Image 1 (cartoon, rainbow, N blue to C red):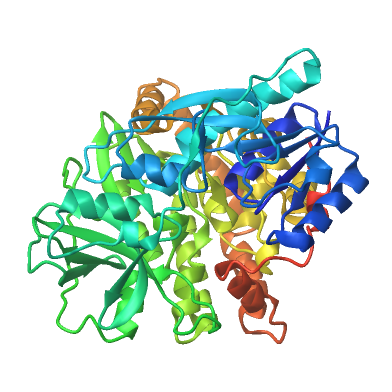
Image 2 (cartoon, rainbow, N blue to C red; image 1 turned 180 degrees about the vertical axis):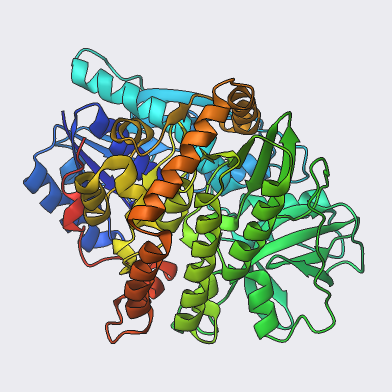
Length: 574
């Protein structure tokens, strides 16, 4: 079918639906709502004229489809709630109320929002984590909800194509109101860790919880409980890895990121950045200590740590999870130190990642934007990424595996390609390109990407700047294995698969072949040459007269909408 995807943003769910439908040989085009109103409606009508769709699907839409469109075309809306649920904050309310099961509904657009005939529904479990506060909204959205939404959309498309299915009338329901900031507000002098963590995680990654620190308003993000530190409720107790620990009445939680509220409604936009960076610049961390956390093979704590190491038989599992997948200069250096420790352990296979949700998106644009000299911080950040990737590429005595439990993009995906094998969970979205940020890219991609997919496919992937699903990535050779498991089972499933590699009698021969291949590759073109060539172009991106990278970075962080749907989205290839 010819299908038009209409969305408020080309976000992870829209990308996933696009690549999955395209892989099934549907003709997919995308139009962006561009802020709603007359401008968004005009963009939609133009896309319909251009693509002549047989079906319109809205995976993520915050405004109504105009009547002249839904009255002439079947328009399916993906609502993040079960049948009968209505309103703009469905997932927020489900998490705030501690629901253990939720759903997704694909319904037809009509005059009343979320009230049209139902074409498909899919339920999913909301994981009940051992940590206080439950799962973060953004994690749930990208994983369990996205899995359910994908299944429901694919089923609805099949039903539309059959021309036989009759959608069921929407059940009676009521619209939940928007989840306002006064309902998210935290009373640090009265609320315990579980309640505070739940409010923070329910607001992740948007809109955050509006609060005041040092007389200034910030949107808070985070919510990881702390099991040891205690103090006067509301006070700042410590910093670690860019996060700040704040006391509750019965414990403490970690704030990972902050976004200053605009001083004036029409004031300059603000961007989210590591909490310690924002509060340090505001002079609010004087006397607040920076504390570390031990990296031991079997050390388990309930605290904030972006990097953890475990061992499973002969397998080392270096698990890392950075907020939003962004890796700052210090994050990269910390992960490199942990990698060197893991490499020294008596294991045979070393796994990177093996964590549910985002693997990595590369350098930390928020930390760069908050730096006194963004160009200098960009340069430091990319060099730290390169140091990490080079350490992985030159590991000779272990088989390395990058296990992607979720999405990866740009330098974060190229980080994964440094490993001997790349595994990705079904449903993840991969973006193997840098062009949308005005960057050439580094992380040795000019060596690793052509080695996997060939020069022509490497050129197309980086120039076209479109997402790739796991199935197509496997066809191309970009990844080696698709993980068929739920997000919750990623760590366990990866550990079992990796242990199978570790006990495989062929492993010594594989390692010997790996060492030989590294020697031959170095003999042809040393890794240092790739790094130098890439960094020469990156230096020009950061410091040169062309300001596109800095302008695009600011536009991305401030969520500036494009003037029109980019032409690259007019046709999503299979």
